[in-house]
Amino acid sequence: MLKIEHLTKRYGDKLAVDDLSLHIAPGEIYGFIGHNGAGKTTTLKSAVGILQFDSGAVTIDGLALDADPLACKARLAYIPDNPELYDFMTGIKYLNFIADIFGVSPEEKKARIHDLAERLGLTDDLAQPISAYSHGMKQKLAIISAWIHQPRLIVMDEPFVGLDPKASHLLKQMMREHCNQGGAIFFSTHVLEVAEKLCDKVAIIQKGRLIRSGTMEEVKGDDTLEEVFLELEDGTC
Image (cartoon, rainbow, N blue to C red; front, top):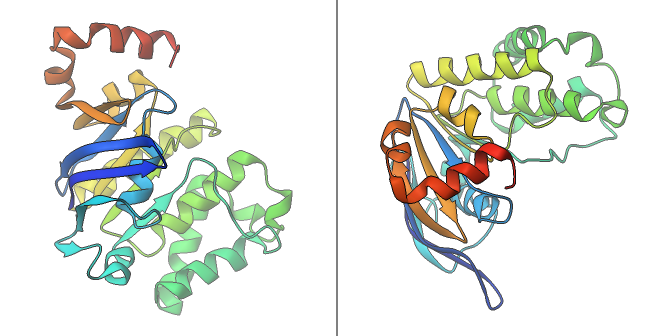
């Protein structure tokens, strides 16, 4: 579903992502673990076509990102760590706008907005301007907008930050359902417990380099990563 091959990204003299390769298969929830500044966000933004990278290749659902970026973006959804929405719109206008961009039919659009908003408890707030939303409400709106066109791949940057426990539980259910239907999830987190309970596979990035990937059992069985896990567990990351 998502193949990242030898991805390298620099900011001036700083090497933010260093020769990183990852393969995420259909049906997988794949966690991307690392401390703040490790290169997680840069990798995600490069993988979805927001950032240009210096070298490497990204393939989404069999399509090369550099050769056919629009077709790739039609197959994915991306939720940043701090959703940047159009504050002057109401919630419902924003969702209609996103659905129209992806060519969702009027009937499907109406049904999906209703179902997703009801599930996340946002229905009563859709008539309000986004400028009046809390961070958690904006996060829920971003989740709905990501799911609305039923993408094959969903990429999320720290998606549980700002969500209440009920919404976090619902999002985890939605992620698993999406993968059970043949989709794939790639998300970043610095919370080890989230990755342990939710992910089929994980990758750990440190100072821009991928240092380990595999199932959680395989990764946690690597004694050389003991210090990294201790940092993640005590929150010093």
